[in-house]
Length: 227
Image 1: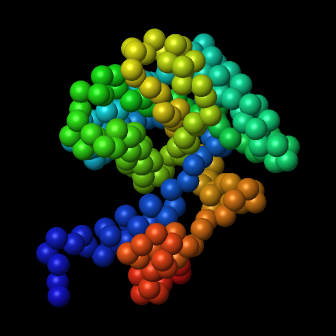
Image 2: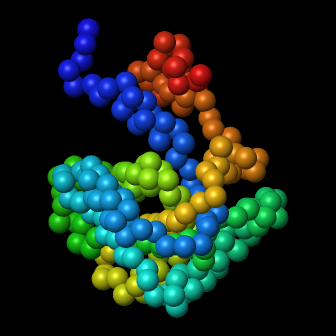
């Protein structure tokens, strides 16, 4: 039966393609990001869904070179601390490139707004839905960036208090992502951490349950996801 709400085959294929080819980018070419393109990507983020329509995201564009250096130092400090915490995998971790903050054309900080406690709709028992909403906005941005042909990387290794202080954030606001955007020579054919042997993507069947936790779903529910 025809579905009048469905996009055309070509449009649908493009959506699935950009989802499959989105990558967390750490390698960038020098050069700025076109201002109109950046605006489109940010507007895509701002169209993200949010619980109770609270729109908890705030974006800070970093244009001060000295501030970019400060933020990179904060990330480097946490990178070393993370390596130490990994124990036997410390050396392997230190060989990974985990960010492109010095090379990317644009650096953005995404934060949770202050006074979120005023928003109860959808958050009374799950207050973390504000963070989930911000993550949806970031995913929108990631997909838009990939469709536009620019790379985007999410950096999450930092002390939020240090970043908040560096950016003069109000009490209650919280940074959750440093986003690197810029031109790339190419997009990784697979997630970089998978290419480096750090981890591999789990099969859909291994994370899909039916009716109860850890009760495997029937094959018809997962067979397409495992192709």
